[in-house]
Structures are given as C-alpha cells and as structure tokens.
Length: 542
Image 1: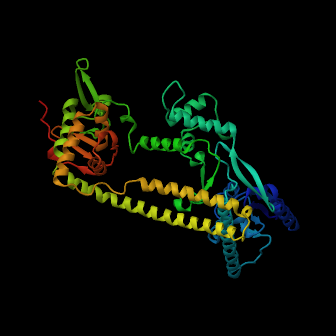
Image 2: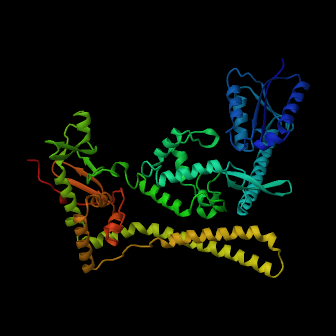
Image 3: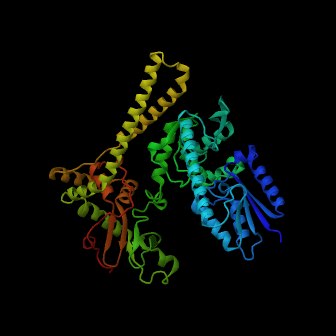
C-alpha cells in the first residue's frame, strides 16, 4: 500500500520567499523523493517567512491540526532537513513524539539516520547544532542592524506613519535607506497634534477619543486605509520620532518587553513638529492619566466628587438635591439608582457638612505644626527608592556622554593628524554628535528634577507652613480648593457615626515643601496615610 505523505517546506524571511528558490527547490525535491518510492503526496504545507525557533507558524499549525487526529490522513511527514521543521531540539523532539502517537513517521530527505537509540541521539545532536547556528546567525544579524542604526540608517521595518524610506547609498549588494517625510501623511500627523493642542477652531483642545472620531468622520485614514482608533492616535501623540529623534532597539523582538533606555539607539530624522510642542503634549497626557486625575473629577464643581464612598455598600456617593436645589446631600449612588437591593442602609450627609468636615480634618487635625515634621519624614522614606533610581540614571547618562565625547575626540584627532579623510568619518561624526545632543538633553531633564523635598522642619517653620496651608486652603477660589483637596485626599468613607479620610503621603510632602497653591500640583490617588478613625467624628443624624 502506498504511503500518504504530507510535505512541509519553510524559509525564514519573506525576502527569501520572494527572491529565493529555496521553497520551490524543497517542494521539487520532495516530489521527486516521493515519486521514486511510489508515495502519494496528500498535501503540501508552506510557511514563507517564519522562524523555526517556535511554533507560531500558520501552516505548521494547520499541518499539525490536520495530522494529529485518529485515523490520521498521513503516514509520513516529509521535510528537506530537520532545520526546516525546528531549530530547537526540545520542540523538534516534542513534535516527533506527537506525530508518532498518531502513527506518523517524520522523514528527512537529506538526514536519514535510520532507527534506534543511536539514530535518535544523532537527531538530537543535529537539532542542537541547528539551534546553535540559528543563535549565532541571530547574534551577527542583530549586531549588524544595531550598527546600521547607529550610522543613522533605517533597518527595514515599516516606517512610522508620516514617513517613507528613501535609498541614500549602496554598499556592495546592500542598499542603505533613511526616513524622509511623506507629505500627505505628515500633514495628518501635524493635524493630530494641532487638534490635541488647540482644537479645530470650533472647540477647545481635543482628547484622544475626540480626535479619532473627528478624523474618521472626515474620511481621513491611517496606513493602508485603516481608520483611526484610540490606540493609533495615542501612539502618534507619544512617538518621539515626530520631533526628530527616532529610537531603535526599544523592545525585545521576541518578548516585546521594553529594554533599558541605555540600550536604545537614537536616529535623527526629519521633524514634523517642534520638540517644545511634543513636551507639552506629553505633559498633558500625563496629567490626564486615570492614575493622576480620574475623568469624573476634571469638570465637576463638587468639592469631593469621585472621592466619597458609602460605608454600607462601598459604592460611590452622588449629589442629591431637595427643595428646588436649596438642600444638597452626598447620598449613596447605588441606592439612589438601583434601590435597596443594591444598598439596604444608604448613607446621606449634607454636602456643606461633609465638605466642612474634610477641610477641618485637613487644616486643624492633619496639617498642624505638631504633625507636619513627622509626615514629612515618613513621606521622604518612600521617595528614597525613586531618588536612587534618578541618581543611577544620571550616572549612566554621564558615562554615556563621556564615552561619546571620547569617540568624537578620537575622530577629530585622527582627522587632524591626517590619519582619516573627513568624508569617510563625516556621517559617523554626525551620528555621534546627535547621540551626544540627545544624551545632554536627557541629562538636563533629569538634573532639572528636584532630588529631594524639604528634609526637616523646625518648630517655627512648621508653624508658618501650617498657617499658610490653612489660610490658602480655606480662602482659595472654589476650583483651586477642589483641585487641592482632590490631590491630598484619595477617599472619604462615610458612615452613620464617622467619616474616615485617606490620602497620599507624597502629596502631603509636596504641599509641605511647596505650600504655594498656585504653583503646586498635588495629584495622587494612592492611599498612604489615614487619620485616626475617631478623629473625624460628625454628629449623628438628628
């Protein structure tokens, strides 16, 4: 009876698939091999441009799904060599055993080791050799690509939206490319930044979602005619490439994890926007993060909006009004919107009473001359890790800067001594100068960050700071007061007898260190301090 054969062929890259004869050759050899033995080819599976280091290959998966059933439609899986199936000995052995469970023999046209323990050992040795060869090849390819990026050339990935590649020189058989502006797409990128910063002239500055809707409503598309999604717009707004610096080697290609910034390679590209505008956009995006400012608190005029929780059910509380708006209460939202099934013992408290309670707790019981020094000391402990990280990054950047400057000095010395022609080192020198400028910029940003907040407070200083905070908190305009309270307080849990307030040590420390309210941002929503449960009592309901 003739054997039924499944043929599997593979090449590693799409470029090989397009320009090489490897796959046609593999298939031709397989057909001739089967013809000599009167075997019948039942099906052919081809993966063009797929790595053999894992099983993430569509045709491989289809082949295994079709083969591993009982009864199997195949008797033999035919490959050109072991490396076509896997370059990993573990994966190769696992696949062979899985096929054997369904009565399928794995046959290599060019590596026939026979049967028995010696043959299996030889197969494992060849598989290990294939894995080593793959790792060595990957190492050399990676090294070449990194150097290519250091020289300012594009490595072949899809260009960022707004750019296209252009050939700039030939080196043997290899073509070197750089990025240039794609005019039509670039205008869309500039439009997106403009909408975020200023709006479209009929409204104020737009958010990410509004920008995506605005673009799609006008028929503007992303790459390959795709519509704009929130993620697409956000990626554009956060890509440093658009102000002239593209970073290569940011992520591990296999794990997709972010690499340390010291391993990134900066490539100078034509800028679409100014760096100043890009920094403003990043700051606004940072301030709008839910971790910094919940969306519900941005436009509300309620002092404690988003902070108040019902002790009975743990749910949020909302403002309720009575007598035509003359009376206002914080009331359990769950009970109000869903009834007693959601909260059987709802909490309600007059808005003015709870607002006053929280302000009193902050000014008279928390931000007091006696407590400020201890609060500052506790907050500083939590900052030590962050400060150590900042110092480490500064040190690394200084070493990088010194290394780059040393390379520049050596090039200039070689040129001055006549050991090198300027044309031969010009591009590399420009690349080094670009890297130096980027390092200086990053270093200046880190050095602009305060390394520490105020370490200690004398009794006189504590009294002065406490008085200033109390005065400014109670006398500030409503919007400023609300923003300040939203920063200091992360949650207010209201019960029948008491209200428990939680807040952030770091926000308190920032307020203590820079108590001028019109210049201090105090946003945090991580509970790190809690006043005593008996310190926020309110009178029972009458």
